[in-house]
Length: 506
Ligand code: KIV
Ligand code: ZN
Image 1 (cartoon, protein in one colour):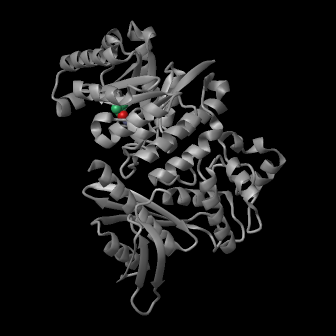
Image 2: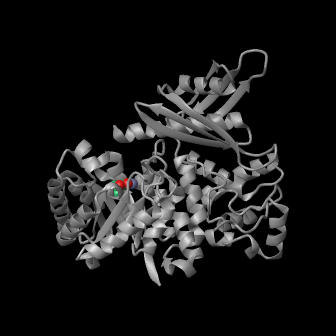
Image 3: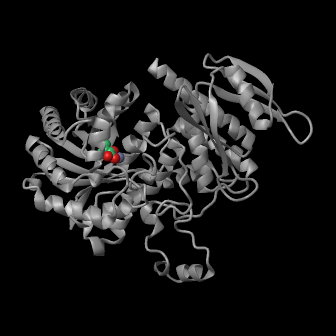
């Protein structure tokens, strides 16, 4: 059975998704989780694109030792030199060089001939090879490129030293059989192909990214590029969890395997959703809230008698907590700590104490504290551990008579307690205006969503807020049983991220 190399690009192509910007610490946290998931390659970023991206790739390269750490570079000297600068401390560094290959891109965007592009590709792969043995090359928009030209470029870059050849369906245009034939053609027509690994990178514009990836694996590709929850440019990339579970569940058909620690999938999915602010749709395969829920009586009856009747995967294999044990106000620190460990959290004693206090406060308000409540509570604790401004007190008056009014008290970075009040069109508007008077950072609120974590009137409400400042979007989240408090926390979280980003970029 052949092993497929899983190349995760959540931190590069995934982060390119509109509104999905992550800060340095968040990227590092995701990279640590990807290491636990046992991905083979982490594409950590595009170092030349910004000082922030460079720093994130550099930090990940220094800290994450097991997977290959890859930096993306256009086929230009400055990009390649910068990518190497960022990854040079990695235990296993890789440079990924790409250049457009289709006539559409060459004619309208690059304004270069096929010969010029071929020459550049060869030279830039050779330049990358001077830095590291491990060089990947991608002919961008390959699925809309004349196959004969792809074969020619691939042969040239293998001779120049490329060890992985990645075939991107950049615009998500390909059909599975068509893309599969392109991959098969590469094995037949590129004479030196046995010196490289063939990889695929599929986008999801027609909802076919996973199908195209699996078809390519069937036809001989041995590296697959994907992202957690399928996030990425436009409609996203192929979803890692779907590919990995398809390979595992249909081993009989595909005769392939991956090195992924599948029990880490659920946790990774939750973390990426939490940090990017992109919710996972309930019916999403493998990790959606309904993926293992059976509503129809006939299905429930079957699953009770024998899960295999309607479940093709055991939810425990993707790390969905098996126990439906709920904690309550009589649960002690030990039970709380055990539950955290079962959910995959290992907190320092100090963080544990803070989380336990928050748990006790929640258990006083809410009869049953579920796993989702605990996840939300821990996420809130982690958010508040690196705050610039902290919400100290909040009081709101609203209703169908009178003017919504909010009084807000914050702890400023200096430790000083500051307070102000404002009127608004509604309670959330009044809260945001009062916070604005205290923090004073101009921005535009572009998105506000609230959702309950569990069923029940006493549920925690999670609020997601996106704000825009100087063309950059910042996401904030907040959780509380009072949704006005959640809104205030989410708005402050977004402002804190804006302020932290401004501080790093000077
Ligand atoms: O979609 C694409 O073509 C890419 C390349 C940089 C590989 O992301
Ligand atoms: Zn892409």
